[in-house]
Amino acid sequence: QTPGVKAMATFGGGSSPEESGEKAVAQSRYKLSPALSISGLPAEVFSIRYSPDGKYVAAACGDGVVRVFNAATGKLSQTFSGSSLPATILRFRPEGGPAEGRSKNVVVAGNASGSLQHLHVGSGKCLHSIVDEDNQFYALDYVADGTTFAAAGKKPVVKVFDEETRKEICSLEGSRGFGNGTHAGHSNRIFSLKFNPRDPNVLLSGGWDNTVHVWDVRAETSVKVLYGPHVCGDAVDVDEANNVLTGSWKPDDQLQIWDLASGNLVQKVNWGANFHRRDPLMVYAAQFSKEANSSGGKGPKFIAAGGSGANEARVFDVHDDYALVGTVTGLDRGVFTLDFAPHTNDNTPPRIAVAGGDATIRLLDVVS
Image (cartoon, rainbow, N blue to C red; front, side):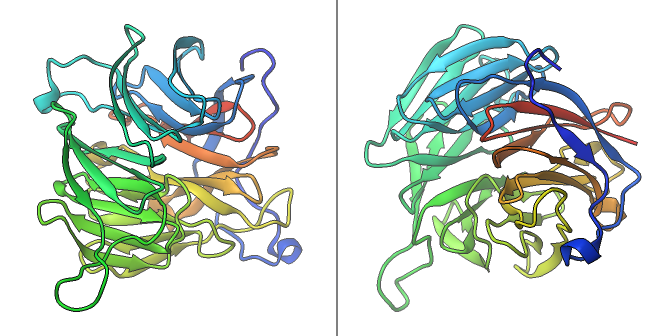
């Protein structure tokens, strides 16, 4: 841990169900092991992401600054000051494929002033800005090959952009009125976007209106709606088997898994008892782990989620009936964001970054 880091507790199990009144959660053979902490940031962290090669961790912070750290040492590598309002969401641009030959380590960051900025980590330069003055951006995602990206936020509209030209391709929104000419869309703020990793024309969006919409980008239409998830952060994910993970900011049914093809709910992940509080955990961030291509075709091995109330983050073992791997607890403020590092080698443990209101970034390994 770096000097001045706050204490962090990690556990593998839960308190007794008799004490908490909640259903006990089975314990996985895996556990969490703290690897590195980056503390003393000037503001809370609203979004965190690893670079495609895993060498950097970028953080969108409440003081409007995007800070990029060396993922191995925790040392600050670059800062970008783009707004006096909070930096709220970011993504690294994917590399390889059609993106081969482009500048590497480019971050797209959105903020509460309504701007999207392409930031180059190596040079420290802002390469391009898109401004929507009446908007605030809370959600971003790229297609897997990096050719297009989508953004959304305060307005109940998803905008899709061409990466090369930075021009808007289309806007995804519902229409008002009744009859055959109307179609579904969001009615409130949007906090999460996720392209289907296998189909760049399928985009999911979730937000305050208790729905997750499945969009056909070509037709610019919502073709399916998942009802119930109250999404208040980066808490919608899709794996390569078309399983959809949703995290909800509510005291129960916080983590759910859906079948994308049918739209049916197939699994509720039991959060279990809390360690230090009786407050329920309400989820801001949820994600599948990223080793799907190297795990024998079984899909992601783990799910991670975190939020406020109990101020915790937890990792669950997907292949062991969602047994609990471990908990990051003892935090003063909520967990707003998390991200699994890129993972292509089964001989190295998956690593996850967790951050939020206490202005500390914690990196942890999932070990057996």
